[in-house]
Length: 113
Length: 117
Image 1 (tube, each protein chain N blue to C red):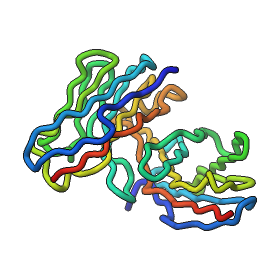
Image 2: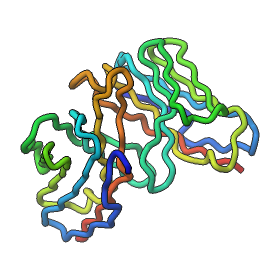
Image 3: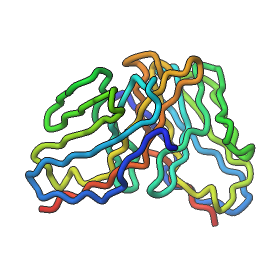
Image 4: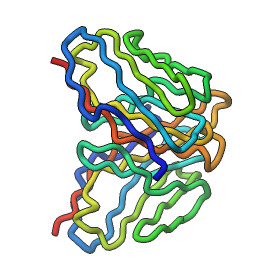
């Protein structure tokens, strides 16, 4: 079982719509959660982090965390063609001295004009 | 602006010819990481340094080595590149190690794309 699972997509949404990206994780001791955006051929850039259950909003982006169900999602409101990219979910399970980031393979988002 | 810099951005090498990739940071972060990322895959952690303490992932091939001569610089050496080593190599930094709260957030450099002929 992978530590972090994401649907590879592509997820296609029309411009102006809400894009919903989902991520599930396997280890209940995970405490830190991140969303990164990665344009084709570029490196990941941080969108936001979330640590507590519930919603966290930053501009057009909202991260949602549900630790009981072990999923974290990212909503993008008013999607723009410039949002077309691969979105990576990352989690940190707390396992003592050997903590590290676990990344999903990403969901490819296409926003159509 | 504080940042993570990687050089070169593109590297072409021949099968078996040693290559060195470099990373520098002006963020004054304690932790530096090297990841390998192949197309449509998750970044795979190769090494990380917490200050001068070196941590090697168990499945990182012996063909890969790393050096961190000072806080700002980190190098990835590939001693005998094979065709399977062609990938994007990502350097990342964080103020604190994973599991330490907000300072654990990782910031990536632009990456070096390695092509092996």
